[in-house]
Image 1 (tube, helix red, strand yellow):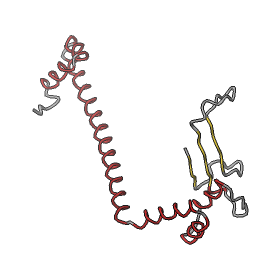
Image 2: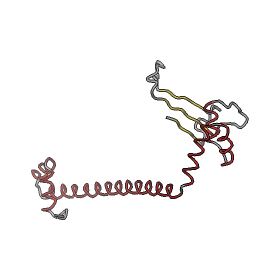
Image 3: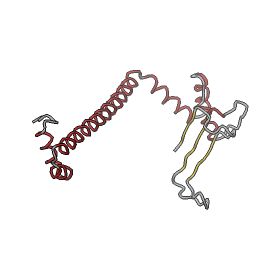
Amino acid sequence: HVSILDFVHFPEDNRYYRKIIFCDTKTGEVYTDIMEIHMLELGKLSPEDQNEEGIIRWMRFLNAKSRKELKEMAKQDEYFGEAYEELERLSADEKKRLEYETRLKYKRDKYAQLHYATRIGREEGAKQINELNKRLIELGRIDDLKRAVEDSDYQEQLLKEMKIIARYD
């Protein structure tokens, strides 16, 4: 996993690159070399540091402040050139970007609606069950209460009988 942060996550030092591995906290034994987290804190990359090797070069590219700066870097390195072309392609197609954002908004809205409906349904269901239990206790129908707890069909029958829920079919 690579986290590219446009903020400072570890303020206690000035290291801008971290490789985090999974290991046993007592022994330090590495759990696996398959899973790693690479954190790039772009906010810590100082302009004075001119160590232009590997990951630092990519950090500078990702941290570019203008299109002109990106273009200059793209001329100097074929990989940056490919990345710049892809960024240009993605940002040039306004229609595609709007379609993507619309799909994303639709998914988020659908999830929010489903979450809200589920919450409301659970609250309403709890109210109905509590009302049924209360009435059964008031009427002294303890055997019906016990059976309703174990038999959902019988519970539904009692809810309809006592007109706590409407019949929808």
